[in-house]
Image 1: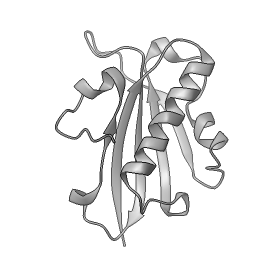
Image 2: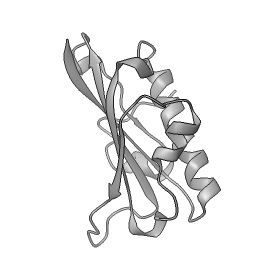
Image 3: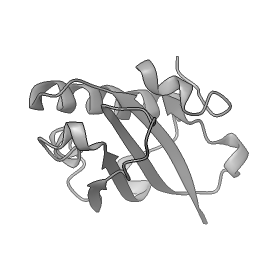
Image 4: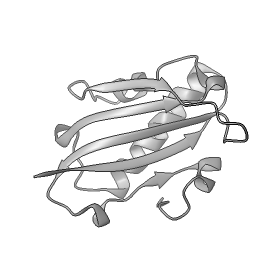
Amino acid sequence: MAVRGIRGATTSHSDEAAILADTQELLSAILKANPSLKTTDIASAWFTVTSDLQLVHPAKAAREMGWHNVPLMCSSEIDVPGSLSQCVRVLIHWNTDLPQSAVKHVYLHDAVKLRPDLSHAD
């Protein structure tokens, strides 16, 4: 079994409730786009946030969704001039037999412009 990466991102507002809700929306969309993805198959998930959203760890949103046995990490996105602000990104490491080409990445709201070549949302 291989480890595949699922990428995703969303934008939010600078308050704790919005960050958690928008992160849960993103994770739910990733689960929907990849119907065979189960939390028991997730090796880990790494979240980053831009400096204007450092009010809560986005991993808390995953924990609130029941991702209790998934190793989660949060860090700051590097502050590149002109880059998208108010952004939460995630990289999920998925243990799966699917080829990387079958993995669906999800970018929501203003984050769609980050990777239109990878974006998938239903």
